[in-house]
Length: 490
Length: 85
Image 1: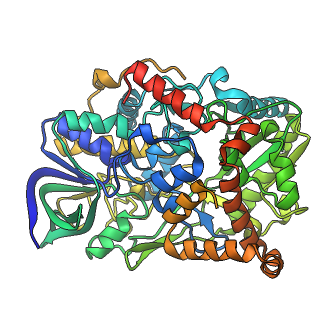
Image 2: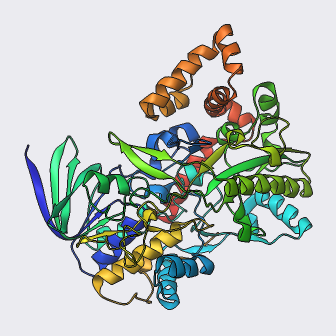
């Protein structure tokens, strides 16, 4: 079959949080970069604020990727340029210091505070990260705030990557104002301006490996044409679910037998509350407020919200009761629960599709039970006349079994984990694949433990650190390019 | 079946798509509905899918205070006015 071969300095696979950062930083330093993305580019003119259409267009498998285990967990993943940063809620947390300390102690990862801080700063500048104002957060956040204040629980407004946000309420269905600063409108344009070549709809089939060195990748593009990229360095950023599959297909990087294992997810769920006054949950920033009173126990609350179609899908009621409650949608509030998990799962391929196995362990089940009981307390303290927990009717949270839970997860991590020891991890502290030269990984798969907070800033900071490591320079503290520096309105 | 739900189902991987379409057919028949009622997990999956389509309908959504077209149009106008990508 005819094809084309491209020689380059760096081949980056995946244009999400990790790959976009690398492509921009490397290209701006003058390197030749080819960036391959399996999905399409997205035109925000096509964002309709209608959940079913947007799920179909912006998510892998229409957002229906599901784990196998007890209980099954829905794991929505973004597809296309921007990856999951296109469809996340935009929440920005730095890696908690106790997590970095754990990585040093347990995985031998020497992430010096000053160096990683410089990466955080650089990413946050590039993404216009700022704190949501109470006005923009809307009434759904006000409900959570009222409950937390009455109970004396620690809380705050979230920091987000947004600029010029008007609270459209559909961050996860494609921001129609392009206020959310996902990598598709920040780092990718920077990379392209600096000369990087972006190839969309490029399905990377395998790595090219010669001896103990990676030499690039082979992909199929468009109507099946072969594209070979020959590169000095190859960087995989296909995400936690798909990076291990590509490595496994290429029979690479599994000397430790850890490839595809150690999957953590941050299992999550949400409760609804019926309030006396209108909330209009979709008016404002859906994820804008957090309660971290129980973060030390691995339990975090964050507001979530969306249009009626989204709420109707998530409301844990059926039949007439569902319809009666949805008729009061303007008075519904919602609060999410996220667990920093100790359970671990795995991913492997069946044909070319991922099979994700994950079951909740006893400690995480207890966290979910406790979290649900506390969410109920908070919403009642806020004045809810009814609280709808995601459990079978009448079941108390402390009695919930795994099969009673309706869980989702948004933060898969760890399937090509970093560990300084080649026998324990897939990549080393510099994210170089153990035992194979010329190959690095820069996505959630390298994150070796659950974070307890939303991971996009961690992933992008690690990618920034890798970019400067590959360039042989310290991380630049100078401001990111002016085009991405604008006042944060939210 | 609404247009939005049809678009959504078309993008779902085939095993789930076939399963969901079968459930939709089953739910329309009295015996099928009784069968589904005995399987809470299946009933829940079906209800969630149907609810996603039903409440996406502009007329019903508007009654609940949501106008997707207006939200999208405001977004486009702001993007153009401010020269955003």
